[in-house]
Image (cartoon, rainbow, N blue to C red):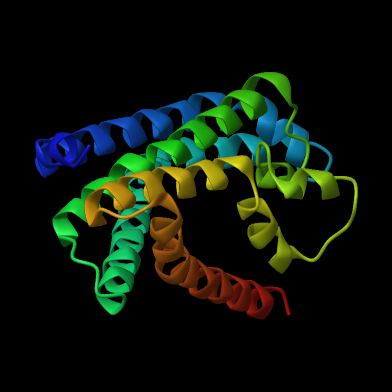
Amino acid sequence: MIIQMNSIRINTLLLIFAVVYLLLAALYGSLILTEDTYLNIYGSIVSVNQIEKMISHARATEWLSYIFFPLFALIRAIYTAICIYVGCLLRNQTIKFRYVFKVSIVADLVYVFALLNKLIILGRYREIKTLNDFNYQPLSILELFKDVSIDQYLLYPLSLLNLYELFYWTVLTVFISASIRSSKKEALKTIIYSYGVGMIIWVSIVVYISINITT
């Protein structure tokens, strides 16, 4: 597994990474940013002319999603790689940052499937009626509270408690275990102490910002 990962050029991974997220951005525009979506959300609030202006504005700025999607995913992959690399150093485990970065990019494909699943379900099988419908996260604990009113700052933490995140941790554990030549249990501890802590910090920042925006 280490040899296979090391044999993959980082430029190739980044190119695939960018293309995948550009395609997701295009899919987002075609499935989610539709006239029906705007009519369902704002139809009873504003006039048809205003909705048409909103749609025109959305189309004019749609190119921003082609920057945001891959950029946000890249930042997430870099953050994950830094967390794991620092965690390995603190636990005296030898690993190259380049390898960890490749692992974080490959593992991010789990989020690609999660986002693809979300876009297809929202675009084809679930009608978007309110802005809260965008918070839908497949296979997450958040779906257990879909009929319950919860504070906005809890939406993101609850959305992260999903099966995709569990699979993401599994992928990280398998690759890191192969690199540091340790058991899966030991590698999982490394992921918990590194990425786990980093995730708590990240979520805390998002929750803090959400609380300050909504109050």
